[in-house]
Structure formats: structure tokens, C-alpha cells
Length: 453
Image (cartoon, rainbow, N blue to C red; front, side, top):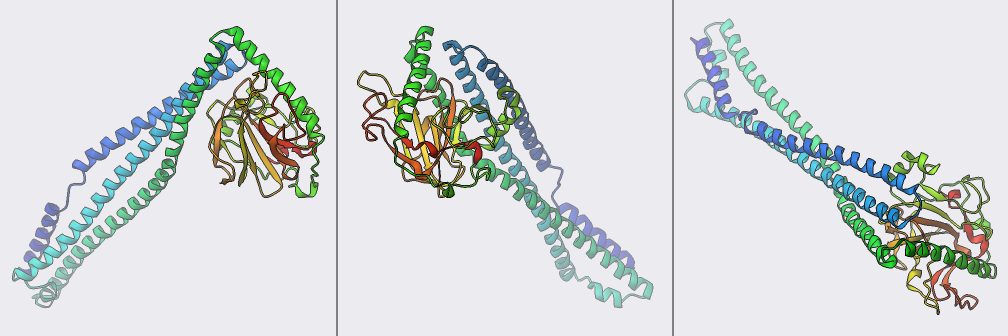
């Protein structure tokens, strides 16, 4: 009789648990499935967009090899706008996908917690029913059994029941912990992606900067090829005149650079002034530029090699040019302070000719004897005296100044040999860019950026 009553009690308790516990394959599974479908859709969109971006890049690379005409310039700007828009969509899809993943895991964690709570409530209810239903407790059943065999049977059934419940609660607890860990991992991913919210703003600014450059180009040339070619010729002539005048004055600058104050060449103290993803894209397009860094013009008169003389001699190029679509975020190559900013395009000489030279520029002063220069920008995001950390966005790339195509002019100067002033203030220059504020350095203050990148 005792065995029958104990087995009946055990069956009733298990039946009660089945009634109380939620069905894990019910509404939650459908909701999770719907969320996963949305995640899969976002991931597919990302894949499709990345394919589009790659195709746009192929078209841009092909366009860059064509003769420089107004139409090719406009086509390039239009392609860059499409590429930037696609990149913005990729970022938004990644953020949306992460939010959905966290939503799905949060539902799973909530369901596990509900099941654990129900298990605990079921155990409590069963014990309360035993206490109030007049049934003897398990200990009483054990000692009141008519035989030792019946007593052990009752004990085994009670022990099995308790262990089953404990195992269920423990397994659910482990499941909840695993889900919590997964949620934390995705939350960390979301945190990283949320940092891209600022990139979304920057990408929108990049598109706006690109469109503005296109409109300005069409307005300045009046949409005529002849005017475009004249503009290119004027920029090239302005560059030669500016560099000739600057070199003449630089040789008279009474500043002394102590070589011992400079970092060792090859030390790699500087970071590339673009994002890691941008530089990875350059490496993937090495066949286009003949190098892995999107460099279109090197320092001095020599080809790329770190063992080349690093000191500028007054001839050739005083920095490196890195091809970059208009609106590409430009990053500080090292922590420091903003030493100066300017816009030479806003300056005209007495004959009404614009001082192209650097266009919009930023110079940073670092604490290791180096200054870094960023020129031909479309936008400047910093101000004089502002501290910056390596990797901070200081502006957007462009083609202001005497640039005839979108790129960043990146220069490295010895701090001791560099001043920021107008050429008029320096030795009384009266022509060309006399009233434009810009960095002026003694000849041996110009350093090869590749010696420190």
C-alpha cells in the first residue's frame, strides 16, 4: 500500500511540474525564429553591399587610369558617392544585426529564468501540499514502512525525485549562465558597433563633402572641359611658383635642427593617417599603385625605400601623397597638440589669383621632436591648441590647394626647424601666397615620412 501511495505521489508531482513549466517550443521559438530571419536578411544585405563596394572600387581604379578630363573627374566623384553610401549602409546593417542578436538572446535568457523559477515554485508547492494534505513526510514513510525493502523503495523514489528536480534546476542555471555569457559577448560587439554611430555621421559628412566638391568643380569650370584643363594648368603653375618661392625663403630660415632630438629612423613611431580598414584596402589594391599604401608620390626624388636619405634637400617632394576619396576621415598619426590650421585657398594675390598651395591644412606637434602635416583637406575638425590622441579624426581628405586629384599630402617636420607664419612675415614676400599662413621650415627640417611610419 505504501509503495502504491508513494508512486502515486511521485506521479502527481511530476504531472504538476508538467502543467506548471512553460512550453519551450511555443511562442518563444516562433519569436526567436522571426528574429533570426531578420538577422539573416541583414547579413545578406551586408554581403550584397560589400560586393557592390568592391565593384565600385574596380570602376574607380579603372577611371583613375583614364586621361584627366572633367567628365572623368565627375564620374569618379559620382562613383565615390555611391561607394560611401554603400559603406554607410553596411555599418547600419551591422548595428541592426547586433541589436537583433541581443534581443534574441535576451528572450532566451528570460525564458530560461522563467523555467528555473517555475521549477523552484513547483518544488515549493509540492512540499506545501505534502505538509497540508495529511500525508506523512518521507522520513515518516521510511520508518513506518512494513518492511526494510519497502522502506528503501520509498527512500529511492524520494531521492530520485529530489535529484531530478535538482538536476533540472542546475541544468537550467548552467543554460542561463551560458546565455548570459553569449549576451555579454554580443553586447560587447554591439558596443563596438555603436562606436560606429559616429562613423555613420562621418560617412554622411563624407558624402556631403564629396557632393560639395563635385558642385564646386562644375561651378568653377562652368561644366566646360576647356575651363577644367585651364584650372589644372593653373594649379600646376601655382604649385611650381609656390615651391620655388618657398625654397628660396627656406634656405634663409635661421633655425637649427639637432639630429639627436629626432626619433631614430625606422622606429615606426607614427601610425598611418587613415583607418586600418582603409589601409587594408590599399594592401588589397597593391597592383593599382605598385605599393601597399595607396602612395601616388614619394618623398624627394627617389623611389620608395626606407634606406633613402630622409632629409629633404630643397628639391622634389617634401612629403608623401596618399590617394583617398574626398571625405575620407584623416586620423592623427601620433598623439600631440594642434600646432596650426589654415586654408590657403581663401587667400588671393593682388592680381586676383588664388593661392592654391596646401589648401586646407592641419599641423600637429608631438612631444618627440616631430610635427606632422596633413594637407589638401576638404574639412578641418580641430582647432589650434587642441590636444589630440593617436587615431583621432582631425579632418576629411579632399583636393583643395594645388591638388589635381583627391589625395592627402602627409608631411613630417622636425619641430625645432618649423614655424607657422605668412610668407610676408617671413622675409617680406610680396607675391603669390605672401598672405597665406602655413608651416615654414628650414631645409633640413623636412623628413621622409616613411622613415617613421
